Length: 351
Image (tube, rainbow, N blue to C red; front, side, top):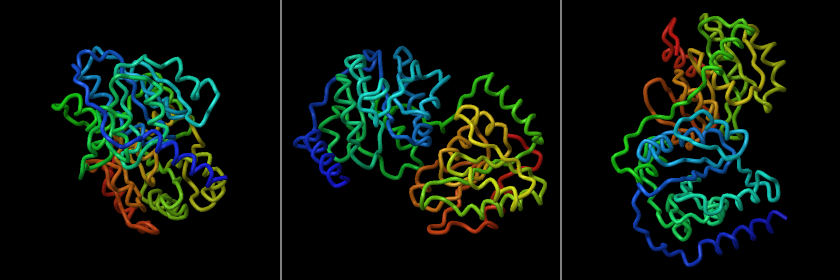
């Protein structure tokens, strides 16, 4: 069955790509663009956060244009309360007949003056190409890769040597405003969310200075859970209260945390926006190459990224307040991570 699916996908890609030649490039005035759709259709939190600078910059360049973001749950809520976004459209590409799936696109066809296909920069996106075609916009912008120039009439080359994925995707904004200046991703919480985060801190009995730890991760990108617990014990020994965030995939590790790292505070899975608001109140963050690491960086919390895969090192912006410790295979030693976290942390400091 999987081989049949792969064969069908290859046939569909060939149909979409056609002869691989560039479409005629239209002449246009950016001031004539009134409605924009931004597509990020994969279910990865970090990929939404990376697009914040791009969308914010396009909004600054075209303040009269309405920007709508099409993204899947639960990560579509990352765009809520963002001044640059006029509407968030929840779109589930895995749903053929559901109200949030492909049937939704019929009501959006012809709605946009510009579609920005902001999918994977390194390979052809079948779903991104289909959605772009179905929306029927006169202007379609995205990266030139694997034949997308047959779907996009405003293709741009993937930049080489971009320091971080957010900077790479920012080239989409520069295609509309060559003078656009990059700023790192920034999470925007509401006053209500910040108040609820303080209330949650009080219920958990957290002190003013805390260090967040998220021990999750996907496959070869995940650091050993016992290494995270070793770091937590080291932080406790130095007077820093660790707060461990366990997602659905890590819930079965609660007993190990309570027995091997007694004294840590444990927070079970929170919805995305309350989670981000709580993270923003912390003084330090330690995690692997995960969406929560992107959230911590976007909220301005000093962060240590434990990176085991080359893509993780390429994805995150270097800069102040971030230490990426990369070692392929098993990752850096727990002592190295602990030392790096303590170096990054300013005693008594707050985000």
